[in-house]
Image 1: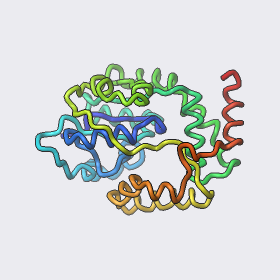
Image 2 (image 1 turned 180 degrees about the vertical axis):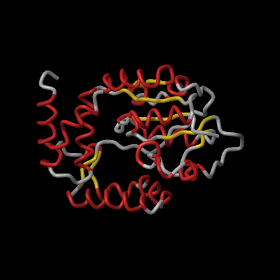
Image 3 (image 1 turned 180 degrees about the horizontal axis):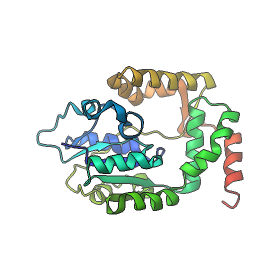
Length: 249
C-alpha cells in the first residue's frame, strides 16, 4: 500500500496530536517516526528506505489509509511534485492557521530549541513567510489542484476529529483522541533546550525512533527540561518581534 495522505505542513498546527490520534485508531498505517521527510530531504535513498518506516501494522483489518506527517514538504515544490508522481491519488493535506498566531508559535519553537534572541531574530523573516498560510494554500492549489485538502486549525483546537476525518475522506475512523501535544514550552535553561534538540537529532540519525517517541510522550522529561502551560513565561523579545511584524494586531 502506498502512502495515501500527506500532511505537508505547517508545523505548530496540532500535527503531533492528530498523528497520535490516527495511530490509536488501529485503522491507519503510521510510520515509526512522525516525519520521514523522504520526499524533500532523503529522496536519493529510494523507496525501499522510505517503506522501511512502514514495516509494522497492528490493526485487525487492512488499513484504511497510510500517512506521512512531514511538516516541511509544503516549502518544497519539488517534494510536492514527487508526492504526486509517487501517488497521483494522494491526499495532500495542509492545516491552515492564523498568520500571526502561527508566526508567534514558530518563534517560540526556536526558543524551545535553545536558540538565542539574536538567532531567533535572524530567522524571523523566514518564519514570517513560512507562517503565511493563505499564500501557501494558494500556491499548493496550483501544484496539487483537487488533491489538496485544507484543514482549519479551529477544528484541531476543538478536537473535532469527526469533521477532520470527514474532510480527509475517512469518516469511518474511530474517534480516539491522542495524547501527544506540542504546546508552547520554554526551556528552563537555554542549554537544556539545545541538549533536548541535539538528543532528538541524534536519535533520529541513529533511527532509534521507538525511544524518541517514548521520550516525547514522557511528562517527566518535559517537566525536567521545559516550562509549559500556566508555568510558561512569556518571552519579551519574541513578543516584541511579533508586534513589529504585526503592528495592527
